[in-house]
Amino acid sequence: MERKPDEAAEAKPKVLIIDGDRIRLQLTAELLRGRYDVRTASSEEEAFRPQPGWVPRLIIADAAMPEIPALGFLYRIGAVAELARVPVLMTTDDPAPGEQSLLKQSPNFRGSIPRNASQRQLQEAVSQALGPGPRLGPPPGSDAGAPAPIRYKALITDDERSFIQFVDMALHRGDVEFHRASDGREALDLARSLKPDVIVSDVMMPGLTGVELMRELAKDPRLKDIPCILVTSTRMNPKQVELLLRDLPSVRYVLPKPCSIGALQSAFKALLKPKGPVST
Image (cartoon, rainbow, N blue to C red; front, side, top):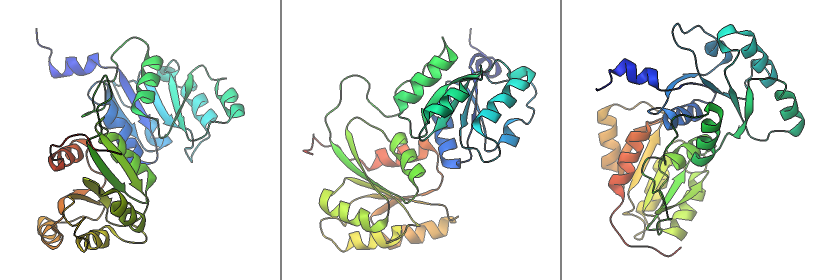
């Protein structure tokens, strides 16, 4: 018998993700959504706002929230009746041994995971914290099993590290070798040495903007035909996008920032031309 939508949602473990970094928050949520009933909060105040009929089975919280120390957050969780038994995973860049010892004083604490955790690390941490239940599969578009031969090289450029992480994890595939640049000038140098198959670039960057990078690539006969995806936090209407695509022939897609994983994956996949393994 087919489940009704609300029954299907009820069967999924509820996960609350708390992080002040909107890009990292979106990334974690999209990686879990579909197999878990996910809700997000960008602040402690929002996290503790009552949600009638919805109590998380797991909380994933950034350890560096400005409003309250990690230990204080855990104690506040323990003081809320409906959350007192909910396990908590804390995300952090560099967990100090002393801090970990303090956090372990809370019965809710289930461990720390890196903010830039790989898909596998996130999968294992969530599965262990929740106990028996649904597990995350491989990242969308990835190849399970034996490593696939490298067929493509992709260049991701953005001065915002968390967005590079978002793109890196969203587009992860066993047959793609990813390279990263933190500004337009570094991206241009890497493009000249690597000749990537696809470039994903932010528009607003130091050194060279994304638009200036595209124009520099257009001057090089070896690089002018590399298909590119531009991402921008500037709101653009369809006419502005059309003019940008006309001015920069190598740009095939212009996506908002932040963008959905699905839109980014679709654009990226459309630009990969079938080919055999490449030497690295």
